[in-house]
Length: 138
View (tube, rainbow, N blue to C red):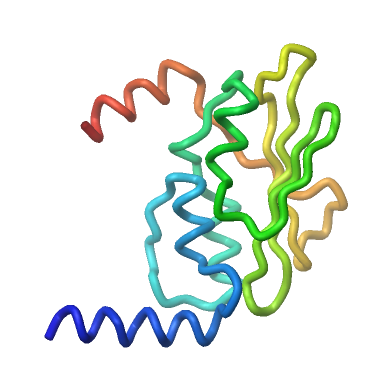
């Protein structure tokens, strides 16, 4: 019965978000969803306030980019990578900025409700905080 209910919920969510699921975006960041069923705007607020558990400052570019494997669109430039998810209403984009040594420095969230052209900066853990999180999970 539980499995049937879960399948029904997944179908309902997939109808609402036919291309990318909010869970795929949350999984890329390693964030735990506080509210599974919330409005699109509510989900964006969750994203803006999240602290990614799968990314950390100075992470190697290849590792940071691998986190976004479920993104619909992936673009790679000299010091920037863009990962886009289509969530029914609009695109949600993550812009990762890297230094000269290809280490992650900043991540920005961009979407249609962002007033700043650059997007909303998402704070990154430092390596020690990231390692502590990994130890707590395992």
